[in-house]
Length: 241
Image (cartoon, rainbow, N blue to C red; front, side, top):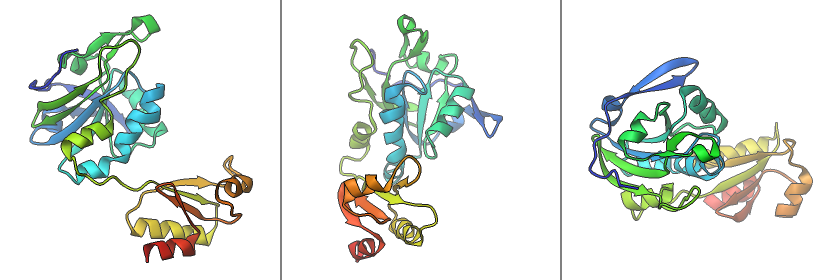
């Protein structure tokens, strides 16, 4: 695969969907005068794309923003309806999904490939790039290997290029139950300290036995930060001092 470094992104309009309406995204406006991180992948709803590639860029969006990146965009050779449904399924709030339904953008980048052998037709090779005022200044293109390699186009690799010394956000998980005032207090404390969290709600397929097995406690909330068990709401207050 040839690197798109040095290329100018094509002048075109992505036919996206938003709130049940067509939402045209013009590349001249989207990229002009901005620093934009773009990553591209073979298809919405596919395993690696849904479990790792898109979620990690979504997770690190605030870190990129803090280091001068104006937007993060995900390109896939899918239509606007599919990309909109995928954004909702993935609860995307920080990444702009760009549907390259005709493969026009991907072809201009020189990274349109034939995946007919698995019934995909023409799709994008997996890559990421930094676009500054419409010009690709850095690209990470996956090596030419069989299958779907995922080695260099990930969010952490791109962040390492944009901001080598960037501090990664803490990973926070909180076990809660509906109507729990102590849970609400703990979540408010996390928000107060600008810590996004993954909330696991008991009763949604998660039992108290699961909490006991993981934490040794039978009460909620139970908070974990970077894999360390902090405890309940009072323990969280003490953690923040």
